[in-house]
Image (cartoon, rainbow, N blue to C red; front, top):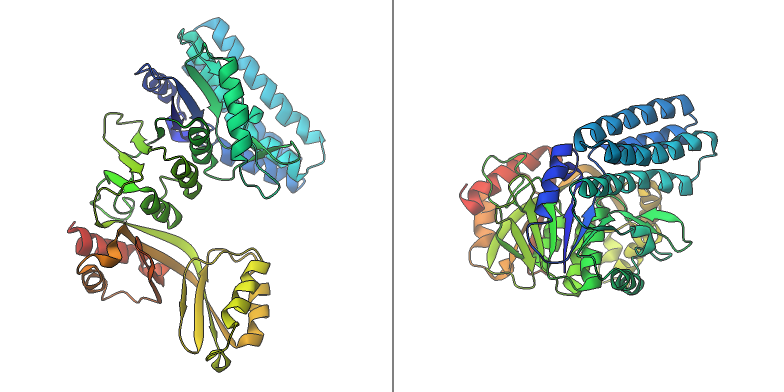
Length: 439
């Protein structure tokens, strides 16, 4: 059995849904299809929720009506037969009645989660109705019946395996299943979600739970590219990456794949393929245990980085100094991306300013604290690049004109990371494309 996940752009238009139905029936292998909400829906639901949180019920109502009109028009183009259109419109009526009812309910975080779940629930039900119209045998498999997280918001993979296995056994006569990405239940049994990009996470968790032959992530790009095609003219799709390489790229800015998607597939050694809905015959990128080749494979950039430098002469030979520094970040649940040290200073980077003031205040007794915002981490990723000849020489020769704030090298055999002011990020990516890939 395999898993196929389709993102919002892949199901965002009726003709795209038509195309997805062809892709999922191209071969006879039993398949679980994971769908995101239609493109733009989650953002619209977030805006509705924000309006409600601010007490702007009139604004929320206007947004709800606009979104409903979009779905009504979508159904007209998606379906041709009156009975399936009626069924699809009944689905829309059900979900938008819920959204209109909440206009009269006090807003809460639990209600917010219910609001955000509506997109995936509607997309899967509409797609199921379309498959019914086309006479394609399938079953709608509610993610809320098997996908769950614990009190720390971590997926309960053991529980997911048991519940999903039971559901599949109960419906062993079916070969095609449709389920929702993103949504789940939390430790209280309430509707919750796997955060942004969570449909990738769902697909990987499902693939791990059933020990799938492959987990296919279908988007509108033909695989993971060796650089950011939005700012660099010439880029190439990467044929093969190891799980470790892909995890580095996803974490440090490659938008095609959510960072959390890697570990479940890696845990059960399920290959992940990144494929293009618009070009289904393109090779795409395969992510598996083996790296395939050595050397530099790709460059990725992560914006919104903050650099914090703690300088203190007391740090010299001070036992436990770093532990005390890290405990401050741990206290405020703030992850560190990069770290460099010298005899008298330690510099770290974080990607959230949520607790920045409190962190700086608690670090000040240790020494002088300097904060630099508007930074970007540019990561050069590949297999065993730390041992690859001339990589550092080519790298620093290529970017000689760019001011580099920090360098992280040696912490991973797959990654060299550089911190630069965000204003220089685009130029740096372009220089690296030429210096490392000759493009």
